[in-house]
Length: 249
Image 1 (cartoon, one colour):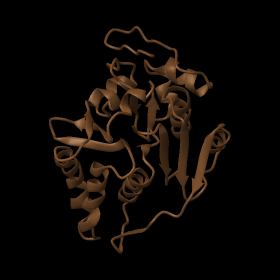
Image 2 (tube, one colour):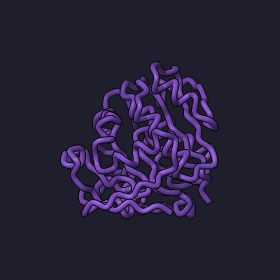
Image 3 (cartoon, rainbow, N blue to C red):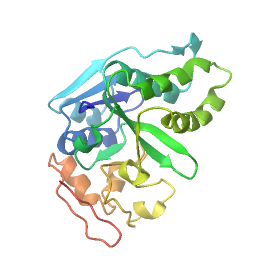
Image 4 (cartoon, helix red, strand yellow):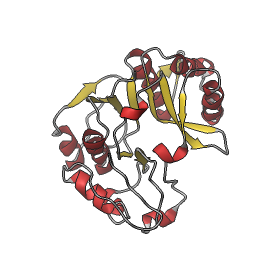
């Protein structure tokens, strides 16, 4: 079974949304451990609030700047590469720091690996949230996709990655989760930020994208939920707006 140890990787400026992510993981995901991997300390009140959260493991490391001996400029490539090696070596779940966790992940522990669907029509899976046992064949196969990376083809490689994971999912033991479970909101849906509805009945987590201010989220239909989490409370808010249902175990 996949361990409920959640890993997060921090490389850029720390925001209030990142603190909200950690809080929601603590309160709602059923995490047995949470580790934040970082190179340089953040700054500001949001960073201070995160560092004061009890039970968080802060692991300071030196991120690789090269892959296959080639320097890599794109931090997304470096972060994803490092996240895959966390799963390969330690197992558990890795996630970007812009998720709000809504429910326990106990149901996703079965099997050797798990990945969410970003867009079924485009045959695109997402590495923003992954889970696996150590040395899972699917994760090892994803790691191997980096073997052709070089400074010349970074852009091409980024575009091909999603298709690689889709094809590899057909060849290896991995549970592919429907889009609404981890990605119920698409950034193109501006109505959500204006108070419009989204359907989250099946959702265990929700990626809200790192450039979304928490103050903006507080004005959406999940505002009560966000306020509870930021106040250090387990999520209990249920929104009864047509088209939206939040269910909690």
